[in-house]
Figure 1 (spheres, rainbow, N blue to C red):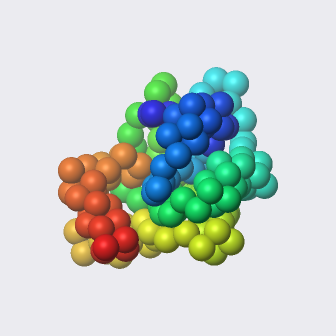
Figure 2: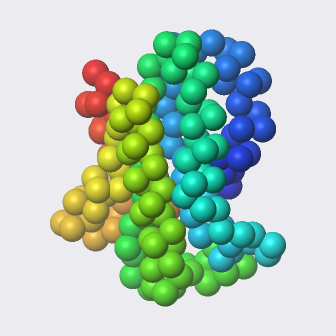
Length: 163
């Protein structure tokens, strides 16, 4: 669901995921856990430790049940100019703050993938490489939400990873 963070997933995880007893679960979370304090009144910094603990609570019961896990790194493309996020103008300085907040969370996802033997789709580095030839806006006009080309790149990478 748009705008949800790990803590929001936790609140509905049992009913939405665990009760279905899935064979495979693919998760892309983290970008909403980054920079939330900069665009939401009353928002706060979600530290990497809190992000890691919540994400671990999502994964542990799935791993225990033998569910195949595919973790997708959160990503942030370094677009030029400014874009509006809610009521906030997101410019290069805000994105710099977001990047500093996101990088440790990317490391958390990588570590959890190792710990749980999950497939890891390294989306942040994938998009950085793709953006080097086309420009980042082609993949995510606002740096966060994929364009159709960005969605296609994620889908292709996902299929290569699990096929």
